[in-house]
Picture (cartoon, rainbow, N blue to C red):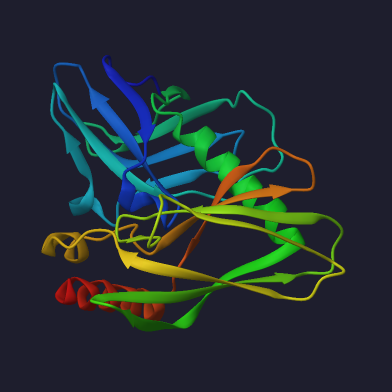
Length: 262
């Protein structure tokens, strides 16, 4: 069926969407009547399948009033690597009609004002290329050292070659909202692994990047490390590695303790 006049679809990501690879399917109603959405499905040549938000039941359907927009979160399917840019993206909406029946719209163009689809696809494919050469993992426990009045944390990153061809270079690691190097803005690494090398461990010295109480309480990305990697002689790019729940708690405890001593 044709979409009601004034209905359009776009996509974006919030910071809280990054770690679980979610995207917001934003439905805008510029028409003159409410629209009741039961399902919103994003289809893109960047991904291997459709990404969909689906209501749990009729009570969970989303009513979008005239002149408003609603973000419908959905977990992205796997990226189609390497893929061809530019990507083609469309969306279909399941709408509840006035008589109570459902109808599915024809494919609607999708606007991507912040380049979210391209960003996710590039990071996914860089990560796939990197992990083909070596596994990357943040290790617990977090250790601490007292240096004068400061409390310094020590966090290990392990790079384990898979045995497949290729060379992976870890150039640097960027700071997070909670963690940064004791000196400078980034951790400069310059370490390589390949099939002939054994596992390598990089130890990062940490300081608390900020100490305002809500920084820890509202943290979303403070324990997600951004690694600048190069595979073989390709273009460098950022790949994120997140701490697991136990390590995340240890890192947050370190920040709390370091701030208490400052």
